[in-house]
Structures are given as C-alpha cells and as structure tokens.
Amino acid sequence: MELDDLKALAINAVEDLKAFDVNILDVTGRSSITDVLIFASGRSDRQVKSIANNVVMEAKKAGVSPLGVEGMNSGDWVLVDLGDVVVHVMLPQVRDYYGIERIWEVDDESDQALDQE
Image 1 (cartoon, rainbow, N blue to C red):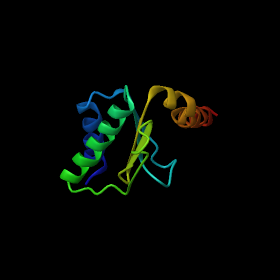
Image 2: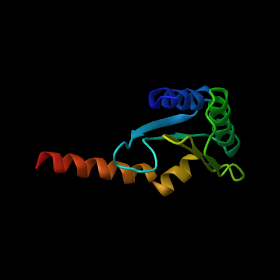
Image 3: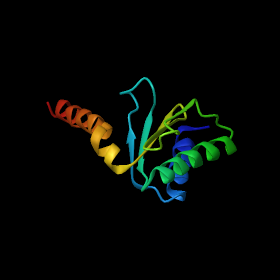
Image 4: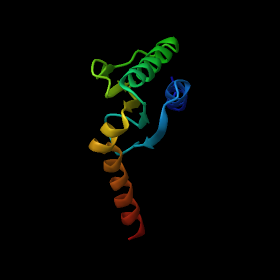
C-alpha cells in the first residue's frame, strides 16, 4: 500500500471513533523506523483501546498486517506500528507527560534554523 493511502487509512480510522487532537508528523528522512507519526487522544482508556483497535481492523481489511501493537492491556497509550506509519493513541495526560511530539517539533525548529544559515 502506498504511503499516502496508508496515512489516510490511519487518519480515517482514528477520526471514525472520535479521536481528538490528531497530529500528523512527517518524519521522512529523519527516522529510519518510519515516515509518518500520527498522534491522537482518546477520552478514556476504553476509547483509546477502541481507536487503536479500529486502526488495526481497518489496516487488516486493506490487507496490511500491523508489525506490532503495544499497550492494549493498559489503554493509556497504545502504539500501532504499520511500518511506514506509526499511530500513537493516548490519554491526554499521558500525551502531555511524555511529550513525544515536542521532540520532533524541536527537531523541526533545528532544521529550520539550519536552513536559514
């Protein structure tokens, strides 16, 4: 499946179950692990699990087998690895605490500063 199609599938899957604060980061060339990171929040551990499960189910329907799913037991942070797209579904307080997105945003700011030199 093409990257854009896989990204659209994952975004639609999280939005279908009313995830909020969805953020898509293109990390192509900055990560050897993936090209796209998708972050989404759920209002409860049950919703986080449901959103992540929907990503898995929609991927399987499209013929994409997830490389891994982590955190489904706890439900406060579930990671779905689709290869070129990695989806993080989190409770808002967990998302704020770990601040993974900020790591990539700092990298963006560093890249912009280097471009201006």
